[in-house]
Each structure stands twice: as structure tokens, then as C-alpha cells.
Image 1 (cartoon, rainbow, N blue to C red):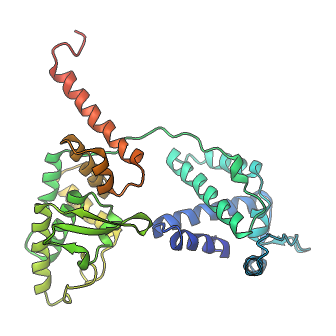
Image 2: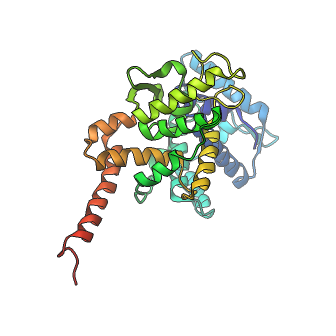
Image 3: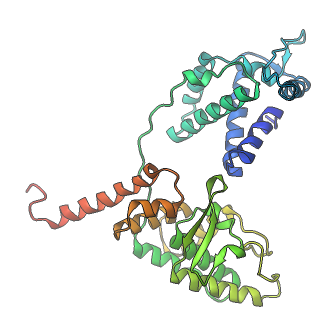
Length: 341
């Protein structure tokens, strides 16, 4: 199904007002289109693109007039309706029918939870915009998910990975600097590729990071990461293929443009294969390892929360389960009376 005015408006709201990443907004948009496709197929409805635009224009006009109410226009003789018509009339029973349909597709629990979150966010937004009359998602409960512990790798594995990139060219030094920065700071890969040269404070040994919700935080940069970044920038500034590096993105691609999150993942995959590590390790695994290793070595939970940029302490507390399990394993292996004979 092609892009639709209402999904475009919703995803624009997610990126512009909620500050969702472009990737997450696209996922929510795809979920919403899947819901619309279900509604139209289930009820044998043919959509009318013209009515869809008119319906959205009507909502916009009503809001500008201060009315703020959705005014359903009925189904024309042709049988065609706008998406706002069928979405606005969807009831909780329809939502449950859609979720039952999804359940037959063997989606993971996490994907199902996201699709429910999409509809919850959409109807809350649509209700405020006057696109719908009431919010049917208030009658829908989100099923509990089993908590999954974040994956972390050992310090020895980290050392092997960080030593993998070469040092002979700019791109090898860039990759080493990227990996060192990810592990040294625990920042998200989206935050890494968003870094500007001006966000780097080598004297103060810190980075200015823009996280979720466009919130800024300062994170310390370790000595190994600083050395790797210095070596990368020293060679970069001497390479005639790249412009002066006093501004612009910190980590660049071979053309001098901003590196993408997908490119970081591809580079990581390359080095994982090179040193024989688990290919399922992701850039986020380095973030998990950063937090776990800090807690293993006595860092307090509040400090780790601030470093990770977590809004809620409960989000950070999941890492304590990893450290507790390590202590338990060490106890079971070392204490003579820990295990029954």
C-alpha cells in the first residue's frame, strides 16, 4: 500500500513532535498501513484517495476554526470511502480482530507489542486531532512480555574486536575510533553517527551527545578512545579527498558524508567475522557491555543511568540482573558448600 495522507501526517508527528528516529517512525507508519489494509480487506472497502485528502483537509480546517471535532461524511454511492472514515469508525472489537489476525502471522512478542504501541500512539494522536470520535485503544490491554536480559560480551572479546580494524588508512582508523567510542561511552549507534566534530572535546575528554527526544548529555571519553579518535582525525585532515574537519560529521563515509547506522552495522559484521566472534553481536551489544562492565566494577546505578541517557532508572536496572547472575555463578563455582553433592 502506498503512502497515505493520514500515515504521512502521523509519522511526521512522530518525528517532529515526539522526536522518534526516522527508522522507528517508518516502522510505525508500516504498522498503521497494515492496519488500514486489514480494515479495507476485511470489509471489502475500496479506498478513495480524493476523499482521503478531502477528509484530512476537513479536519485541518475544523481545527483552524476551533471546532476540533471529527465530522463523518458518510459513504458515497460508489462505495468508496476515505481512510479517516473507516479508522474513525473502528471499535475495540475491530482492533481485537486485527490483533487476532496478526497472531496468526507468527510475529514475535516484541513485534506484536510494537504494533499495539503503534495503534495506541496513533489513536491518541488522532483523537486529539479530531480525526476519530473516541479512542478504542483504551479498551485494549497490552500483553505482558517476558523480560529479556540484554546481551553483553566479555572484556576479552571486546579487546579482540577493538584490535581488528587496520591502522594503515583513514577508513581503518575511523572504524577503530568508532568501535572504541561506542564501548567507551555506551552511546547508541544513532547517537554515534549524529556526532559533529564540534561535539568532541579532546581536552576535556568528553563528548556532547544528542539522545532520544533531542536531549543533550555530556559523556566522558576514555583514554583509548581519545587516542583512536586523534589518530583518525590526524590522518583524515591530511587526506586531500576530505574537506577540512573543523565542522561537519565526526565519522564520515568514503565520500566525506555522514556515516549511516547501517554502515556502522556492516563494518561491525566485517570485524566480528574477522576475529571469529558471534555474528549476532550488534552495536547495541557494545552499549550493553559498557553498562554491564561498569556495574561489575562497582559503578553506581544512577551514574550508569545518566551515562546511558535513560529517562527511567528502571530501564537501567535490567543490567543489575546480569551482574547478579555473574556473582551467583562465581559463588556456585567457588564455594565448597554452594552446590549439593
